[in-house]
Amino acid sequence: MISIWTKDYIDYKLPIVNKDIETPILIIGGGISGLMCAYFLMKEKQDFILIDRNKLACGVSMYTTAQVSVAHGPIYEEISKTLGKNKAKKHFINQLEGLNLIRQIIKEEKIDCDYKEESTILYTHEEKNMKILEKQYDIIKTIYPKIFFINENKPINFPYGLEFTNQFIFNPMKYMMKIADILIKNQIPLYENSTATKIIKEEHGYKVIVNNEYSITTPKIIMTCQYPFLNPDNLYFAKLYQSKSYAISFKTNVKLRANYVSLDAPYYYFRTYDHKHLIIGGCDHYTGSNKNIEECYDTLIKKIKVLDPNAEIIHKWYAEDCISTDSLPFIGHYSNNNPNILLVTGFQKWGFTNSHIAAKKITDIILDKKVDNIYSPHRVTLFKNIKSTFRMIIHSINGLILSKIFVKKYNLNDIEIGSGKIIKYNNLNVLAYRENKNKFILLKNKCPHMGCSLIWNNADKLWECKCHGSIFDKYGKVIYGPSTQNLEVIEYKDIKKEE
Ligand SMILES: Cc1cc2nc3c(=O)[nH]c(=O)nc-3n(C[C@H](O)[C@H](O)[C@H](O)COP(=O)(O)OP(=O)(O)OC[C@H]3O[C@@H](n4cnc5c(N)ncnc54)[C@H](O)[C@@H]3O)c2cc1C
Image 1 (cartoon, rainbow, N blue to C red):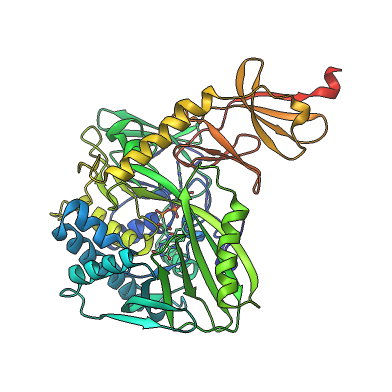
Image 2 (cartoon, rainbow, N blue to C red):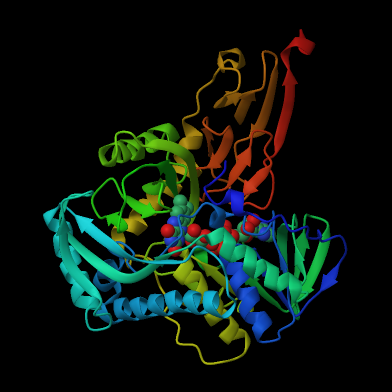
């Protein structure tokens, strides 16, 4: 799958971890969060290394739509409702700081990344969402007076909207590649194709096993690899879920003066790109929830056609991001048991402002500075938002228990070629993929992360975890976490040979 930014990727040739290493700080993950932690630590002359499972910036950060904005849907009203107005205000102030940090870095490092100032407009047709916009206005107005109520007829029609001026868009790949370039020029050790497969706690720190082979010994870990994979410590599986989101770039003659985010269901937004193209994003849903990918794209295409019946679709892509039940990210000490692991995750699909705030806060924690941190992973989140927590528990029960009970017996020959199915086979719960007329790949239906059941994604020929978002190819190889291990192979079956 490629996104609109893939063409701007620079393939830096980085080494793989091929020996045991010692380092004062290890960053796991080289997306926007890991790169920014590395950037700020480098500025503070800290000694560290960074490893990534894949190549730099090839995770969620490559599939973003990169609106850099503080207008995060209805989030401030949600936080105000569950955690109080002060926390909502603090979160807003932090987002402004994140926005300004990116601006400052672009300026100081002279990064050519198609930076363009634009408004973000939150809009609605629904009475209940109008009230949400009014409440948000009330929370924000004294901090940020550059917001206005508006309505528009063309090209997008809405009776009620809140415009946040002085936000911006940029090309995230050009930005991240320049940050990578600065790190490489400063001889920061960066490693690719190096998966942290296990973390072992030792007397004075940690041994991180890489690719199940070599070890990195370190007293401090910064974990920026999206969903935390050290379980069950701090019960992240009950506080955080992954949500899939879709995006489509398209050619059009319609010009937008701003980025438009609808508050009405189904969720979607329009983002400007250049004078010939726009991007639409949205149709978000829980990972592992059996949604048909093509139907999600169709929902967005219908919205495009309303804007411009002659629009031409260019790229379609999707990715997952981590969502906390109380709408705030997790930034700080992993748990009481593991205070020397620093965690960065839970950006709620607003990763640019949040990753910069996170990198700054993590650097301050490393430097032993006092940090005012409403994002501490120690905070109590369970049942702060009852609806969200309840939904997550139901989802997990389904993935861990129910979907394993109701598995049908199925004849291998009834599986379509090029397709996968969950079946009872020799009394085992099996993921069966049919490669051709005779060959099948049979895998254990158990995600190595926490044992959840998987589902088949026929559009991309992948197995996806029902609970926490791990993704595996048809051979069971893990390609997206939190799982750090492959699915267990039961059998490569050739029915012709057996005849
Ligand atoms: C469709 C979509 C649109 C979005 N649009 C916006 C937007 O408009 N504005 C905005 O602000 N945000 C947006 N976001 C959110 C934003 O893109 C993400 O929050 C952000 O990119 C996450 O960055 P990250 O560095 O935390 O994760 P990633 O970019 O995924 O980086 C994590 C890295 O860790 C590596 N890794 C994982 N496990 C291991 C391991 N075990 N060992 C070693 N390495 C590992 C991965 O290979 C990866 O490179 C969007 C998200 C999606 C899905």
